[in-house]
Image 1 (cartoon, rainbow, N blue to C red):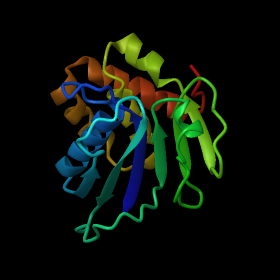
Image 2: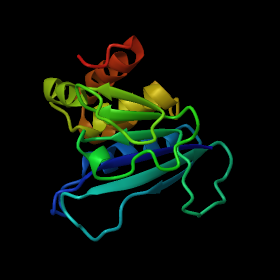
Image 3: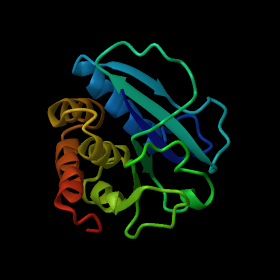
Length: 181
């Protein structure tokens, strides 16, 4: 089983889906389309507004029988470089796990494994898509949790044609090892 924990902030607005929640949904939809079993846990409905919150995604080829909250993510995705100063994003991270931060430069993270900074905001702005699209692409490229084609279909269904170019750009940044630009 693979686990990804996504961190971000939500606006105090029920009509807006936070990018970390949207990225988790895209990955979950792509995994389901590939025939995998999925458990996606977004934050509680109560909006606290602007405070760091997390969502968890579990994907496996076999049924996921656990409902426990003992999370051991392989990858942690953080939408805001200020979140690691306010939340323990490295909690439970698997040995050899990675923390992906949407930033030009990696912030200090206590107790972290590998911290990778990728400027996904610039990808979202350049391709005029929601930040959830490049977040999902970078997470998929780092973890292999879903295939590129399934993610492209899920993203295009939710965000239109511009999503495909944004997915390729974000995955390319991660795979090229030049994540800052």
